[in-house]
Image 1: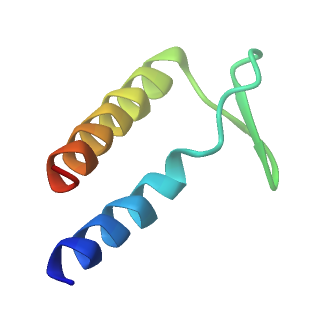
Image 2 (image 1 turned 90 degrees about the vertical axis):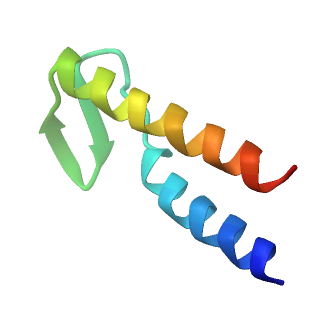
Length: 59
């Protein structure tokens, strides 16, 4: 159960990475928000850390 809760928490955090850039430098969610390539790189790095954490928890 504790491992399941940890995985659920990691998946919830991962949820915020579900909006991907549409190729024009902006994200479409509620209106358009300008996102720089550097910000996308930072978010992707955070996404990778979360994916690695989920992989660790699911072992």
